[in-house]
Picture (tube, rainbow, N blue to C red):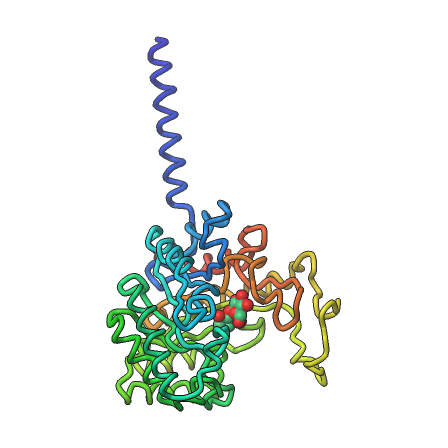
Length: 371
Ligand code: 9MR
């Protein structure tokens, strides 16, 4: 009799244990919910790459299946002097992705910003050609077969669709874009190569972007996709404009990735009628309306905005390769310091305590009834 009781107790413990394990396994996450649609990525800062915070680390692993380095792969960090590369953190980043079976994206090879000071002093086409060849070939071949896609050129366009003045344009003219894509393809023929920009869903910039990619391709450059950064607002850009962009880019045979998605909920000094954008808004309470907590009404608006964006993404999942959020949680976002330093913004799906927000639930909910 006593033996039977023990036996029953043991049996129920085993059943309970396996139920919990199952529950754990089935716990809902972004990456699992969207696994048949597109990658769900995040941008990692240095501490996250170093796995400093256990809670953050398990959240990243649970929710995301693609990673971008938020800063450490920019040229000023990776190539600080002409004959010096620093791969310590990028090695960790790539190993992190491999260990967790994530899609690894490289950001970014050629960008006018966050350049090492020595690069800004490159004077002529011979020097620039030599720089680009060394820079792109060294970095891309180092991670050949391990970095799945690259932002080969970042933010080369002005808002009106013309080419931005930069040290690259000044020394090489438009050819620098063709060269960059050719060099990257030669170094890793299998990696997907992207042109990445912000506001390139806006008609004028989109038009410029389309013409640019057509030219690069016509000159023999390999461009596999376009990155729409998606630093967006609660009320703009419109869903129609985003949809037109997905259609227009994919009509060129390009993969479309949303590479840096976040949605600001704070007022923008540029929107204030008559605002002097040189005015210092730092410390202004009017410009930082939610220093402690996001009111529920705005939380709901943010959730609705995320839901309509992801609904559109799902509609065009056959054209979309990846949707990456620009950071893991609100506390980490660059939008706490731009365009005004020291504000409290709420642009992502997890709050600074790492708790899922209404916006997170609204993105998951879109998948609940299907599949
Ligand atoms: O999020 C990045 C922030 O930490 C850096 O200070 C900033 C420097 O330019 O770059 C931010 O990321 C940018 C990305 O690399 C390219 N697109 C715009 C992003 C936001 O500025």
